[in-house]
Amino acid sequence: MDDFDFDGLITFLGRRSDEILTLTLEHLAVVLTSVVIAAVIGIGLGLLVWDRPAARTSVITTAAVAITIPSLALLALLSPVLGLGWAPTLVALVFYALLPIIRNTAVGLGEVPKPILEAASGVGMSRNRVLISTQLPLAWPVIITGLRVATQMSVGVAAIAAYVAGPGLGQYIFKGLSSLGSKNALNYALTGTVAIIILALLLDGLFVLVARHTTSRGLRA
Image (spheres, rainbow, N blue to C red):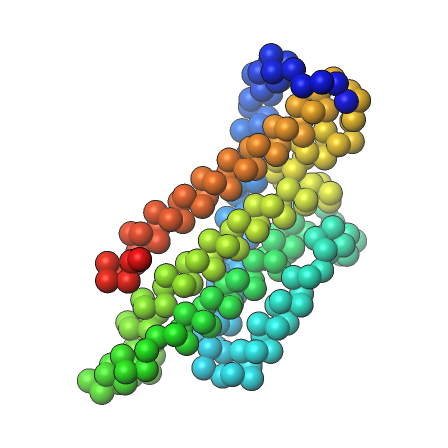
């Protein structure tokens, strides 16, 4: 691989700016879509099992074991069934995003002090109303932390999804690795890697802002 040439990188970025922007938007879209799907599934499961110790342990353990499957292996298993591109990428990202969401939802709901729940019930609130109006708002900081972790994981796994022609910036990384020794090999790999890091930082900052504006002042650290 040629030595790094800063001027060459600037030229490379200028010529491919439209393509880089498209890949960045694709990466963002597949990550956000997968996290939304995982949030619906994960928070739903957390709501179902948080107060059932055996079920909670089983669900969290299953998700924890599942996440140990190497991403390349999972993508390789999914591609014969789902084909290439968006479908296996979305399934893999949802698969890996579930653990922190389920775990944080169950933990957050379980950590709400019992006296608060008893007081809410004592004023005539139903179980569902206590959950929605009291328990979920108090558990929200922990839940959104799970969403934040899931998003960061998804940004990284989405890059590997280029292995099955998945959308996003991973295409540049794989293109650079597959063309080692060529003029732009380093530029491709470096551009894809740095863009993914920047995207991860921006999304993390977005979650910080969302958490700050959706969390009760009394619960803010």
